[in-house]
Length: 149
Image (cartoon, rainbow, N blue to C red; front, side, top):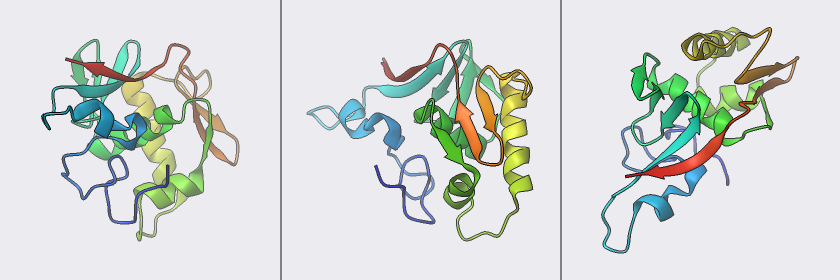
């Protein structure tokens, strides 16, 4: 799938606050039934965590974890590309379009995500640093997009 255009939500491809879900799940098929209603919410699950892609919320055992929507989107993007190295440049372009930021901004964002996940960069369970290249989501027990009623 092609990345969203600059200025649009990197998670949904819609303007910020849009009603669509993350591109990860091909959510149009999951959330829009034949009657046009939205009965399901797709999630990305890596126990004990779960990302509610519809609400841009990280949950741990069903309880909301304090993490900004942008950081939840970054985590969701990494999780959606489980096992793939996502370059620093692509993350910066995707989540800070048309804004000049340094790699330090991304490093701080990843550190904040790791803190929320209680992950350790030296012995990662969720986000692995790929030296001088980027990051890789490595959760051992990953269930990507699911549907919850």
